Image (tube, rainbow, N blue to C red; front, side, top):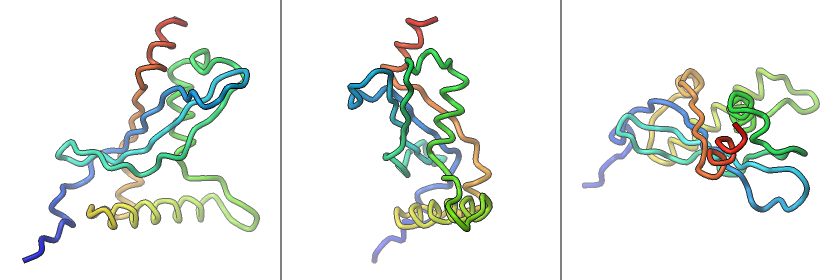
Length: 135
C-alpha cells in the first residue's frame, strides 16, 4: 500500500536562509547567494529557493551582520510589486507559491502558517570568516 507522505514528514518549524559569498562575481565588490529552507520539526531541511542573492560595490562583510541578515531575508522574497500589483498581492502570491512547493514535496503547510514562521539567517563558512577578519 502506498504511503502518503503529507503530514508524515513533520510539521514546519521555521524558515532559514543560508547566505554565503558567491565566487561567480569577478567585478569590484562582493556578491552573496541566499538559499531559503523550511526546517521541519524533525530537523530535516527542505530547499525552497536557491536562485537569490545580491551584489555590493563594497565588501559585503563591511555591511555588518545585522544588515546582512536583513538583506538576506529581503532577497528571498516576497518580491516587490510590478505595474498594477500591490505589495499585499505579491505577498499573498508568494506564500501561496511556497505552500504549493512544499505540498509537492510532501509537506503540509498552509500559506498563512508559513508566513508566520520565525525566519533565521545562517552565515556560511566563507562569509563567517570574512566577518571575523573585518571585526
